[in-house]
Length: 165
Image (cartoon, rainbow, N blue to C red; front, side, top):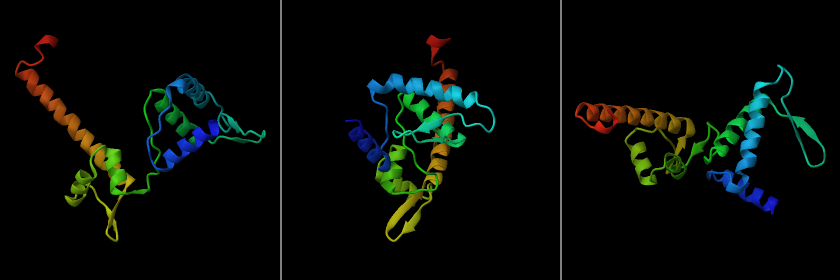
């Protein structure tokens, strides 16, 4: 059963499908995050914080960068968030990029055609670099926050939110 579940999870990761911790694993994930958090903060310089031990007793130290990445992944899973791990240098299909932005593929293609997101053409196909997509997302999110702040300000000036005053 466990190997079947791991195979399913591995397949989802390879397809960039978000992975989340099942409810029955929540307590274990939170406990693992607490342990990793203690390990990353309490280790002596140059000394591995922990080692991974395989089923046959073989072990290897966990590099600090891997430990920090693992801590972040486990933190997000412990909060109930779904995660997708994508190399920053990877090129995405328009469908993968649309899925990451939570928009339709047609809308994403329009953003590309309007020059708001850059792409690389491989024959007839468009490929979008993760770093370009994330830059667009950060800009879009900043603009949305600013617009929301402005709407809130206008609403307050016009007497909205009187129940808060």
